[in-house]
Structures are given as C-alpha cells and as structure tokens.
Length: 245
Ligand code: APR
Image (cartoon, rainbow, N blue to C red):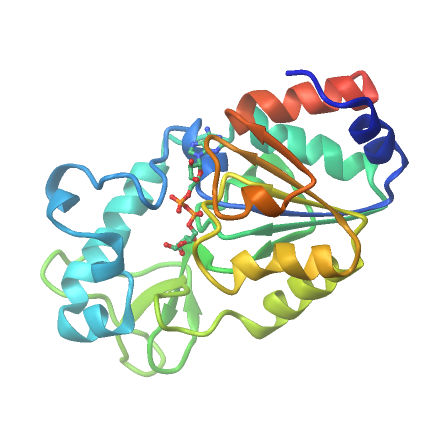
C-alpha cells in the first residue's frame, strides 16, 4: 500500500498516538467479527441476544455455554501480523495507548503493553453477585458454575449490551484520545458507543484521525486519512513505509 508523503512525515514526528481496535483486527487470526454471521449451533442466535444481562437472567446456562464455546474456539487462535505491527508501533512512540473493543485478549498475547480492554476479556470470569474473580471453576455440563465465596453464578468478565463500561479504562481511553497527535481507528465499524465517540474526541482536539478498515464506515467521511483493506497487511506496510522496518 502507498502512503501519502505528508502522512509518513507526520507519523515519523509523532510522540503521542492512540489506537482503537475492533473485531476486524482479529479477523485474520480466524475470529469472525462481531457482525459476521454466527456459525454452527449458535447460528440461530444473534450476539446481541446472548451478550446481555437480560439473556443471562433468562437463561444463564445458554449464555455461559456460548462463552465456554467461544473460549474453546479461542484455544488455537494466535495474533496476526496486524497485532504484532501494533506491538512494534508501541515501541516507537513515547506515549502510545491501545484501546480495544475486543475481548479476545490477542493484543496482550502479542505483546502490547498499554492496553485498555473497554469491553473486558472473555478469558476472565467473575461472580455475577459479589464480583470475585476466579481462575478455575467446575465444568458441570448441567449447571452454571457458582462462586466459592458467595454461591452466586459465575459470568464472563465482559461488558454486555446495556452495561456500563469499566470506568477507569473508559476515562483513560478518553484522555488518551484527547491528548494524542494521531488517532487510529482500526478494524471497527464504529457503530457502538461510547467507543465510537473517541475518534470525535481526538478530532475535536486537533488530532489527525486515520482509519484502517476492510470497508468504509460512518467514520470514513470524517477522517484525515482512510486506508481500506486488511489491517494484517496495511499495518506492517505502514511500519515499513515510515520506519523502514
Ligand atoms: N482488516 C480490517 N478490517 C476488517 C477486517 C480486516 N481483516 N475484517 C473485517 N474488518 C472490518 C469490517 O469491515 C467491520 O467494519 O472490521 C469491522 C468489524 O466491525 P464489527 O463486526 O461491528 O466489530 P466491532 O466494530 O469491533 O464491534 C464493536 O460492538 O457488538 C459490540 O461489543 C461488541 O466490541 C463489539 C463492538
């Protein structure tokens, strides 16, 4: 991919960068994006019908089993060149913040350090009542495992539709988006708030906004630079063009 000379010059001089990633960054690792059709047993469900407190209250076992299936599906999944390019980018930029909507944990797995998991992490499990985190739980196929401390039902430590985002992570994400010189929106449809509003916070503070996505999104008309294609290809190309890596 060819990058405009002014874009390369600006990036080379940048010392503060914020990046927001979505499911598109993990697509080349073999993970379907959030709005891709569900497969197999889960094809009959839309994620929005499973990833909510109401769904968990209505049928905790169904929701627990969906996340158990997703954790199982994650076992063979590895970061792709897009994740690794972001690890390399972080090493070059004094103030670098990686904000992700993904719950797959692949950025940390690849080696990214300053990661804000706005929507939680599917590998973590906590008690729905007392909030205690647990690393192990019984795998009784009939019932949802319960908390050793209070007996409450266990649930994935992810943000469900209708739930508030973790305050500390959101605050840090807004601050990083406001303070950055360059803001990247990568692999996200930009449909879900409040993550989608971070680009506007960056823009309102004079940041250069860059989109890297397989297809145009509602953000595309408002960005300074838009590169449409696979993030696993564009990001390594970007590092090569700017830093010769
Ligand atoms: N490279 C770059 N972009 C890609 C790739 C790829 N290889 N493959 C897909 N995309 C793009 C798609 O074109 C789409 O615009 O990634 C975007 C993924 O969008 P969604 O599936 O909407 O996922 P996301 O934006 O992460 O959803 C945000 O919504 O449902 C909630 O909490 C959920 O975190 C999720 C949030």
